[in-house]
Image: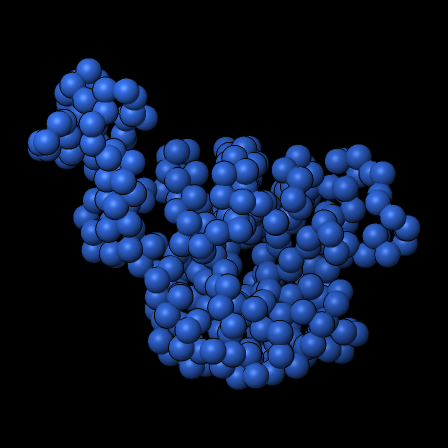
Length: 331
């Protein structure tokens, strides 16, 4: 496994031999600082380690300091087009800025942003999404590129943008290469990893609804993580951001890369079931994953939720804690 360079984001060191960190992104209006901070606190309770917020205008940028003061995890400002928003985000004390140097303005403006980040010790993520690569502007309609061609275009743009920062002697940056197509995403990340030691933030973009997006993301992320590619991860689902966090951790947990909460096993139910197993599991998860202390205490434990005598006793024998139910009784 090729080790990447290390990048400091808040209290975390990303890349190298460090654990893969879990990120999410708020869906609140950043200009509403209290609502945004409240969502971040709920994400922190769910185990989210790095949180990103959209910064569409100066009002949102000016709210970052108030948000930062109410949370404990590193804060990332997501910025496009206006370099002044990045400069203000630095003043407000964010821990990382997500930009695409190609759309932030001319070289002098990029230089200002990089200098501000360097002086403040703030990292930068270069985000390359397949749907916004510059090559698309040169063609009409839908491109007929193969997945390999898509990947080469994405990597080429990432290296081009990274070189801008490297020429300014700024190496505290990561790169992300994302598509809604899992094969293109994996190929691009693999190509970049073969060519550079830059740490990567991984994930699919616009992965979809909870079920479809989780399946696609799990396949793509397992392919990358099993090769040691990925310093941070975000699962982009059209879902409550807390479920994005849960899904990311479940992927990492299944690959034995992180420990997070308990392993909950439960029967799928059948005609013998006379209790609400599904409701019990959902209630149990809601209690555990919304409470930092319970999450910590239950990490590494196995909990069995069973609904009949056929498999229940045997399947639950290996558990640390069991919940079983029958007709009119539970234990």
